[in-house]
Amino acid sequence: MKKITVNTSTKYDVLVGKGLLEQCGELISTVVRSRKCAVVTDDIVDKLYGEETTSALEKSGFSVAKFVVPNGETSKSHEQLIKIYNFLSENDITRSDFIIVLGGGVVGDLTGFCAASYLRGIDYVQIPTTLLAQVDSSVGGKTAVNIDAGKNLVGAFKQPVMVIADTDVLSTLSDEIFADGMGEVVKYGMIRSKSLFQKLCSENAHNILEDIITECISIKRDVVEADEHDTGERMILNFGHTFGHAIEKYLGYGQISHGKAVSIGMYMITNAAEKQGLVQAGTTQELKKCLEINSLPYTLDISAQDIYSLSIEDKKRTSDTIRIILCTDVGECEIKTLKLDEYRKFLENV
Ligand code: GLY
Image (cartoon, rainbow, N blue to C red; front, side):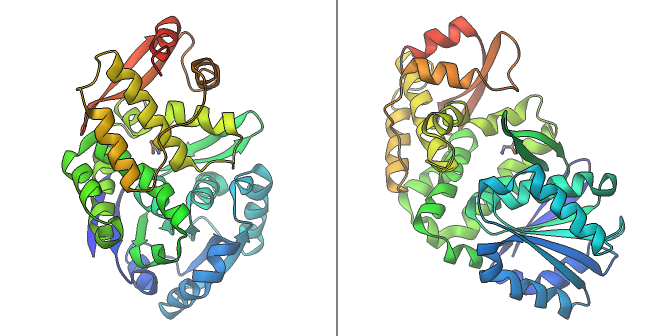
């Protein structure tokens, strides 16, 4: 088992390894005082790992109430949030008790926000069950629900008290969902680690999971410790996301997975930047090779005008500028602030 300690407003460990789910009761008992918790999961994960989780917790003396939401993005809603608040209240979960999130990014974001707001904040533990959640969304404390105006527009920063990433649970992911997580893994290589990137180009990720997940989380830890509240450096984690979010909107949410949209976004922005001499020659080709090896897409028929209008809709953008993330070489990145007319010009090269 590998342990990465994240030293943010609260300090917590991220544990990565095989067989951790069956030890979750023992592991969690080292960071909480209460022996009462609520597990929130989705219907697919519940069938696979609900019982194992509950019995591991009960073996360590925890009493467990379980709430199951339907799998999928539509559960990241205020309606589900209120159902969970009521469930917690009916089951007498108090401020000294805690919540466990068992699932992927949707359940993680939804339940994390619930933990941030229920009784003005109670502890929660993340047990991420997708590759994407293990390398990205379960670490760093971003929590949110969606509203009609857009994704993740209502949320809070709330760090978990522990993250338990059991690599065994990834064996039940479809190739599709696994590849989705690989989009974010390639992103970490591009922004911060040439050696990780090279590994992804030469080895089968399934054979080195603990290694690559640990490396991604260590990169995220460094970034989040430097900028917990996402006002500067943390934006580098959004490499590929400016175009990626535009692509998700263009195709309609649910029509393309987040990781795949980010893969196309990384390629398109790097290609446009390389054509303008902003990136080391050959970087786009290296990225393309790595995406192909990992069964990820890199192109889409979308116009520069569509990318422009869909990406400037981002409510987190400042009034007349947009920040884009460029990887100037594999493993190196920078944040560039462009005026909107400069951004439009930049896009002429996509
Ligand atoms: N997923 C991007 C971040 O945590 O900042």
